[in-house]
Image (cartoon, helix red, strand yellow):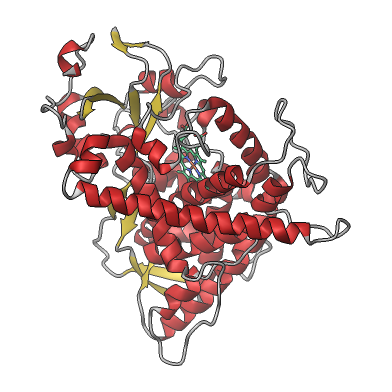
Length: 504
Ligand code: HEM
């Protein structure tokens, strides 16, 4: 067993033959990481099968992993070590998040980053999201009249799916309409038809895809294929992969046809899908120079980038919004302070003119977003993998070992955050120095930093400002604490709120 041959004996739970520490991880990696951390500290190892993994939550070590800002200087270019499971999912050499082919990863990033962080895209995103949020608020007003609770996690998932679909592809999705219809309110149903026949099924498929990433990465092939219980999950995840790949392929082929049939002098709307399809063609919307790369992207390359916009962009933002909504419903003083800021910035609470330029002035709302993500990050453990041996405190971390950074342990450590359990957005406005470096990095850092961070912040601010202007909120259970299920991201559950239309 590799364990007995390892060159440096880092503390950590003793692994069993064949399974390593799989039995201790169960289905909830963050919960197991919390227990391990209490026992072994901020730098420990664990095994999945025969494979060694490291977990760190010390800023000096985190800096080694996430600090370097250039490809040349970073030893942690890879997200994960080679994994047959990730290749089976179709992610080992495609897209970005788990792509180990650095050339293809780099091309994909260079196409995606300018398109989703440009001011013109973000402005368009504010417009489109605002419309979709207004539709949701109309549903909520009906629910309010019926005295119904709003299950925020479900609504945020559905809204996230509609926002990402519309913004990324230009095609409307019907998740919020379908969610409303599941309430079975007599005489009140939405007739909206979306891009996917079943918008709620689409959300589930993306969530399942995200779940399958950690499963495929952590569980050795032998167990996935042979172990009862685990084997059926493996089959479910591979079937789900096929369903998503098929749906996205259809979408790309259809849009390619639409573009071909559009006269050259007729403008095309600047969605991510159209931008990717027209790159290096006579319809090029924006010239993107990526080294010697001068051919159009293939349908497969485009599907893999779009898939990542869905898998990376839906769960993360909607989970964060559910946690934020929970905290601001629990802390009415914070809610009112956010509203005061909106009034100061826009001069009105009645349909303020939301511009990209105004968002920089929403400092307190920004601090509330940071504080919620600090206490409960939707991604609490993020991997990076070294391409060569690295020294950590006199221990050798061999090349191809995966190092998980425990973001939640870092941002809840009393050494860096006074009274970390206290929800206190002001800490992000006051003495930020005392937090130190590499203690709060919710979007990562360095060469693989989250490409969707600006878009995520814009989406969150748009929703929150509109929410504050339209409703008051109250937790159904005032003593509730946020609950989650682990599915690569921490997905909030049971965030039940009463909402009431704002009176003054
Ligand atoms: C609150 C929302 C979000 C959070 C907390 C979040 C967090 C993260 C983190 C921690 C990473 C790892 C970064 C690193 O290794 O340095 C990441 C990567 C990534 N994120 Fe996000 N993210 C969010 C929203 C989004 C959105 C809206 C998109 C849409 C495109 C997105 C797409 C991605 C992709 C594609 C990667 C992989 C990048 C790479 O490996 O090169 N994320 N995200």
